[in-house]
Length: 339
Image (cartoon, rainbow, N blue to C red; front, side, top):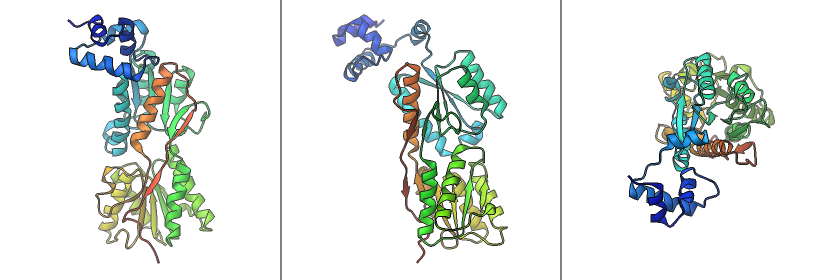
């Protein structure tokens, strides 16, 4: 059986250095880590992480909490992509994911409570931020390491979070439609208690006000981050006495439902109504028409949240509580340019 001493001999390092590499000690250089890990792979050495974790009282596992049940959340490619970013960095640092969902808010809370009190994980990543969330209150009360992908409305100077500037993004995409002659612009967001919805809608309203366009309450709708949510929202929009000439949609998956439902009513995008969206998920370029959308760099949101939670679990200093990932608008065919 291959031992730490064998790895030390093969690399010219001391056994204590090999042990520190296995523990992913930050004091060991990346070059040394790569050399030791290559020797471990070549010689077929597999450290007994369970025994090591018992000694250092670490699980090397992070709980990742979805906003809703798996059957709903994993329909949206956003979550697959953010998990890909988290997983890639965890793999590099030899951490594992414990993924958790719940059918109800109570189920989700109980699962987080079990993770924390049972010491199944070293830290938590929340893939959402919503108003009055008892999970955040619980994690704060227990002084347990956690990171939010999104922006907390409360304690935002205390809670580490990785986010886009969604107010600016909402304003930018709405301003683009206004610049191209649109004046009757509707907004379709996710659940009204999600901070990402609140911020994107705030940016949308700011752009309208700066252009002296009235903000109409009936033009703002909220639905689930699903294709079916987009279809339901269109039914409400088409009941309006004065129909919008453009829609800002806060998620690409909702946009797919919007496009298909408009087609069922004989309306074409962008000829009859323009559409601008968010997230730039993988199919936004291949659907017809291709979506004009805000690229929020989902993968990088995952990577940065993984970096932050591992630093917190290893008691390393974080230079900032708020980590902002920049956004860009990807211009495609779903938004018509008015003359």
